[in-house]
Length: 334
Image (cartoon, rainbow, N blue to C red):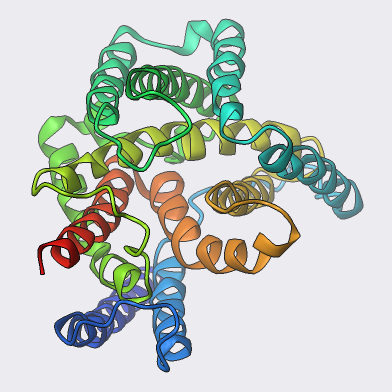
């Protein structure tokens, strides 16, 4: 019965995915690229339906033991509030430089859980971090830092974020239930490559919807055909610090008040919306944008990364930004 229901959820997502692709492909073909078009509400609803189908298809893999202490809802709510009050104002008070603090936090976690990190982990994390660093040299949308400083930051974020995240997941027991799994580390490079391609395939509706709703409007830096490939930088680095580092750390906090499954859900949702908020100018007026991008873009990739696997999430993230940048290049080339 459970297997049948899982297949039904997968097939439902495939059906919604197909319809969404046709819907957004038609708009791309007609040159729609604005957040002010009359059909923007319909676009949001279609993408929301696709997002909902994905979230239903990919369930939380954690199963609580009957011996676990029940969740203390008031205490959990208090911890969530405290965490939100601390991290959300940082976007406005500190701004982009706050990213430099994340490798320091990750290093503290690595010192505490260093015995849970393997040599294979280090090699793979360094491999991914170096790719993000090289790509970061050409990240034309970054204006707050020099290209070299940004590239070095991506290496630090990737290396420390992945290693600390994996260590915390193992320490907490979440890794044993498949949370934040890396296909490359668990089953090999071939399976990891297939996961990456699957992530790209899953991402198509979001990738098409992004420029259709005006997501490419600010990418005036894209001038050459190869520049869209720089999308691999956020695709790797943001999964490291935005998902595999931040969510497990929040989980440790929320675990004080909740069962593992509930604590993980709370950590994932809070991190997803904070991540979306970091991509806004900040302030109260940015909340509507945060809610939209958090729901339609941050939650799907967070589910893929934590509830499925890292490589699928990287592939999803890469394609969404790749198409956005490629669309910007196409607008310039007209």
